[in-house]
Image (cartoon, rainbow, N blue to C red; front, top):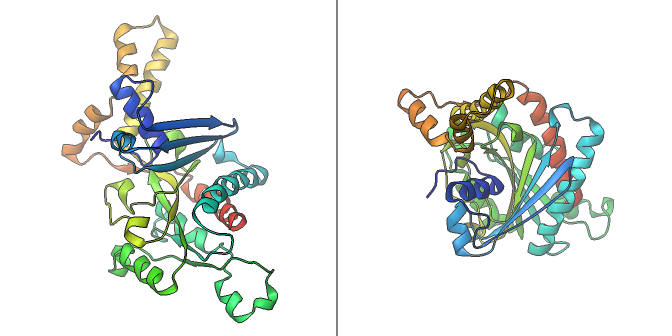
Length: 308
């Protein structure tokens, strides 16, 4: 299978089309809308589409927020409302109005690019215990919501799947919502893009440290995943930087046929091949990651709270 090096279905689709010279892919349907906050929906409808982009059959909604680095409170709120709307559509498909929901924040709270999941959990409105011990303080029809941040194998000694499976088997929620950090093949998308998918998630896949999938097949309940790219590898940065460099050269001189071909080509594999023997293909995150994580935490937490 093609080495996509991205968790985003929309990027995988684009890369597969480019690599194979295709306008359309059998088993893949797409829809785009919006401008300042752009929504790109990729539906994998059959096994042919699933094999093509290496993603299970299901729906993948990508929300791109332009200029998120300088987003003010108004834009953060508008982005959270978009997340609420798109997330609610999937929740309504996979659960009833009052079904129990478990929200899981994956990641390591002590590593900033991987801390989004645990940070979101601190802002989730928890109601499951209140429905049991203080129902008089809640509106009729309030949905039971519980939340947990299981940590990572390196700090707990327990696989994430083992922890989540134990919780699911004991409290028996009807739906799981999982938040995790992803990898992207675009510098622009770092901490400014949200992927919402109803096919679950593979923890650690973004940094080639994949664990057992959190999905309906393994857990017995539907799993909706919200993923946010927080890292890219050095090969991606060099590949995009090369395109920018060629563009700059072409602005100063007549177009060069070789440079045009080099820019049109996906050079990632050759760049990675050159970097890997010396362990230079590092995972990179922007210097503003602290601020970006805090902003994205607000978007995701508000989006989930209003959706459930």
